[in-house]
Amino acid sequence: MRIADVLRGKGSAVATVESRASVADLVAALAEHNVGAMVVIGPEGIAGIVSERDVVRKLHERGGELLAAPVSDIMTSEVFTCSPRDSVDSLTVLMTEQRIRHVPVVDGGRLAGIVSIGDVVKSRINQLQDDQDQLTAYIVQG
Image (tube, rainbow, N blue to C red; front, side, top):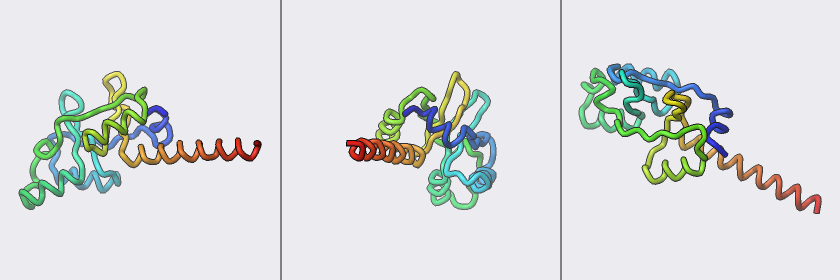
């Protein structure tokens, strides 16, 4: 299964936030979109990625003043991406090795979607169910 298949099932909408937006704006957008992470957009395109976990950890360190800081202060700048042509298996390896939960999908330099670890698990469960159904059908026809 390819990343394009995952995006076909979940859609390609990506919640983004500008790097200069405040952390308070980020928190509001995370809640509004009901997502755990957002791609950070800067003047040159993808500037980073930021998650609820990033907010919580930095809020613990810096206190309430963090809410006025720009998202660029707390985002992760090293962003791992994938393409729609990549396999779900290769993305699973990337997510496991890099200990990341959200990976933007880039196609031809354009942000084409985002895949979460939950999306990967769901696709794997669906694949296992399909395999089981095929085996059951084979045995029944036996």
